[in-house]
Image (tube, rainbow, N blue to C red; front, side, top):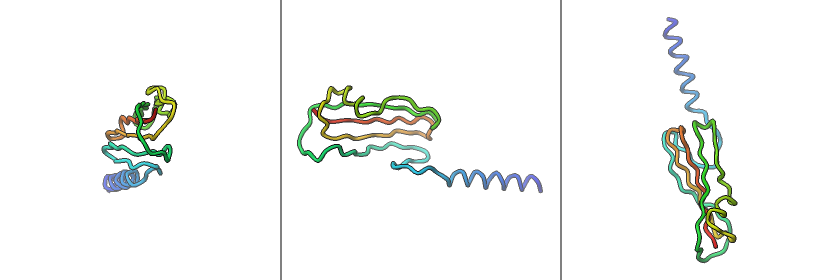
Length: 106
């Protein structure tokens, strides 16, 4: 009887853990995430000639490192005037997640 109660208790705890989550401003897949999402920088229409990127990496949602700032992406592409930005997320099981910001401009 104790073994059944323990199994049920573990099942309830696992179920509760799977149903809880953090609020986020991005869609995240529980098993795999690969997204490209837009970020509006200006209302200007027209072309751009340069692209710069900045990246960050997160390990098991416990340790994160990198510089995903707009300034880092601008430096990477030699951009002084931003036209628009996009960001991309790659994640597999939340073990290793890679975030990339792309800045387009001149």
